[in-house]
Image (cartoon, rainbow over all chains, first blue to last red; front, side, top):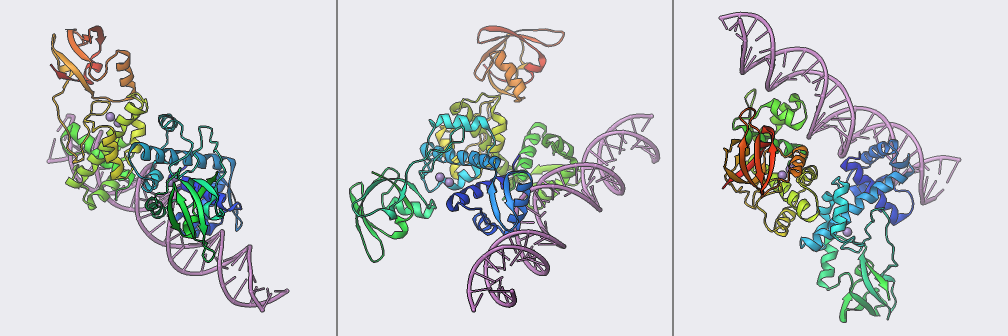
Length: 218
Length: 218
DNA sequence: ATCATTTTTTAGATTCATCTAAATTTATAT
DNA sequence: ATATAAATTTAGATGAATCTAAAAAATGAT
Ligand SMILES: [Mn+2]
Ligand SMILES: [Mn+2]
Ligand SMILES: [Mn+2]
Ligand SMILES: [Mn+2]
């Protein structure tokens, strides 16, 4: 059975791999996990010898089939718990992550599946990220960063790239949440900042904000 | 902050101390925690130096004020989660303990208090054990083992002494659950086995069963 | 192709939680 | 009171997960 630490490594490799699409490097992992490269090397050697990852000295690491399944199970639990916290325990979307980091390690198939049922088999978590179903399949949908939209284009907010509490609170202040309908009114040539309409209300937003918001184009 | 292992020790000392009412011995703890006496000694020395317990070489251990509060927090979480599992996720009372053993270690005041609220501030868990409230107070009620009842006496089932899955399943088969009204019809002199009426239905039960069932006398 | 820089790995140490085996203390039985 | 047994502690070892410092490999710039 995987230790908590091993689970965290697998999850980290999964996430970093998606962003990049090449093997994940020791340093990247170390930064993501707030640890030292030497510790990462150690752990990767262990995970490799237990066949959870495919790791080549100096060349980086990718998940094995088993490792990917394990990572998906953890992500499934993480996101289901986030839904539970928001929908039933009145957490806001910027408060759930830390607790879910703990809850994702609870080992009980029965718990995961009854929670899933209790929540009515949600497909997305409070940040718009897809929840692997019981067979670990992820649903996909077209999403485009707001920063890649052109003037006059329109979309529905369906996710965030940065899901840090800080960024989520900025969105709260702007009354932007999942489901908000956003239209680009104008783009400032100089700095690419945008004037947009959020459910009819006009707002100004920076490029940094725009490049962390996913929309589903209408 | 307490490690998971330290939390388990504190909880074990709390439970064993209640049963006995004298200091808890190294061997008892080792048996309860499925570990070796030498490991227990090690841990007790650490807990002692951090003031969680009062431990005297060869003389056993009791919880300090802090240690007791810490234990109560863990027990509070354990029992709240058990209520959640039974009332909302369709677990039966013999299935909850193992998962609650994991959930009790989740660290989040906010989680504990919103869960408490979500469950409507329950006072007892699915096994009839009292749940410490937000100020860590336990509610008390008079309970007497069925084995100490006399013929013709009556009571309502409010708890179990042995809450192992095996025993709980026996009760299920006898249709005995929390709230069942039980009257002693007859006691066999020879072996103290009993004929009782459970909500009107007559059953025979052994002394072993009778001595693990708590009733609130009517 | 060579050298300097960056990245990664190895070597060796540390802390926690556990173990076994040996030593010590306490309890008990005559 | 002594001796035997039982309980407990100490000593020394191990594995997981981490660290720092040093060595080795890869990168990339001239
Ligand atoms: Mn999260
Ligand atoms: Mn999320
Ligand atoms: Mn329990
Ligand atoms: Mn219980």
